[in-house]
Length: 228
Image 1 (cartoon, rainbow, N blue to C red):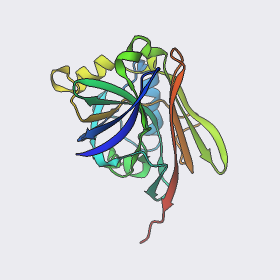
Image 2 (image 1 turned 90 degrees about the vertical axis):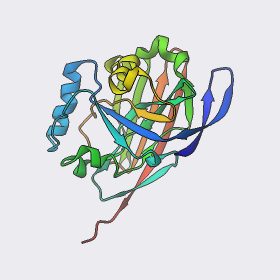
Image 3 (image 1 turned 135 degrees about the vertical axis):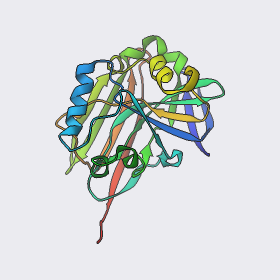
């Protein structure tokens, strides 16, 4: 277990909140539309990554891989980010954030679970109360930008109506349909525009067009050499 400090944005006020995180779950293949979901599966198959055993599927990751830093270090040049909404449980409440499931694609080709341990998972420092956004959940927008060789391009974009509803995602993944305190869960992603590829920098955001606010974060990717 370790602590992360966030700012809870409640529209008219902001409050610092330190949360104890003791587990991280990465939900995969959470698409509501089977056509879009299968497109992402095909995208990964083209990279040699086997299709999932089930859809959705819930991978466990080391909680300490979560980071709010503005850079991460990755071994070799085969990793890339994925924007996702993040749910965090605390004292019976659920908060919504935004993060990047940064993953080593070379390792993912032979073991997805192991690949989830290979890279830090950047997460923005701002959270919203789930109850403040659940009424217009489907209208919220996930978006990411990749900076590749100095050029910043739109990498992913989509509305949350393409993902399984929060209640379904929790019911399928947790005993009794109850989201546990201290759990941070990544909720799935969209296919990359132009295909999955590494970047020197990755910026991601969750936009609420109804309450007109956005959670943002970005990080540089430092590539470490592979020797031997």
